Image (cartoon, rainbow, N blue to C red; front, side, top):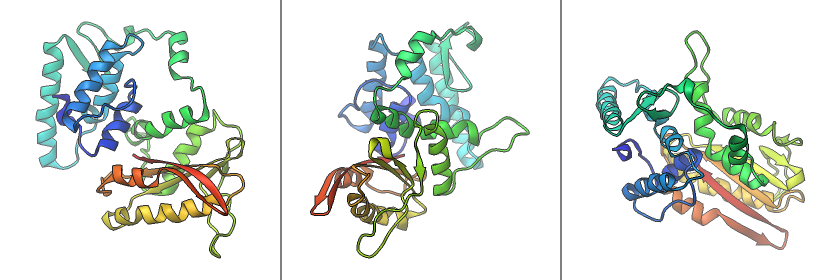
Length: 276
């Protein structure tokens, strides 16, 4: 039943589960079988709070009411089925992505500081960035759906995405240099979104505006990779593509084409690509 709430590409599903705390790499299975295997794996792993993972996976679907009236009716029916199935298995969903045993209130849950620290503390800049990038949608959620009377935020431009990512990075990384210029390449220079000089790492963000842009995003990134390859302080490039409307038709193919080392006489850069 949970699977009926999960739509989009494999990359979308992978990002949702990874940001929700699901353990291990994505199962190499069909879309419908992947989520079942991943939830089962979470339930078998004693180091993972499987109810927390399930709650995180369900949160956006359960808490966000569709604006369209026709979609709302379908959503209400599906949500009711999820609630019913959880109750039949002895659980209850609470707003904010919390799934607890029947009879337990959210206030009664206890989180051990030691366990929290060991679970969330990243071991490297790469681990940190994976958590932050894969968790961007979850970070947006409470800002988009704020308490009554508060101004909700929207993420409708690349600057919005950059500002959120910058805010998430600041507690962890001391030296963040936004909008540094790259060296000239093919008589052109471009601004990078973020340079982390200590780690020789650049983060580039993209917002897919429409289907036509979705078809051209790969070409844009190829040009970006060419620019960053000649930057003396960039050995790693992280490309973060925010595609909330699923305009990219084959995100897996895009990632496969662009990830890895790009090298020529002028330099090299190792690229990672995330479609959120």
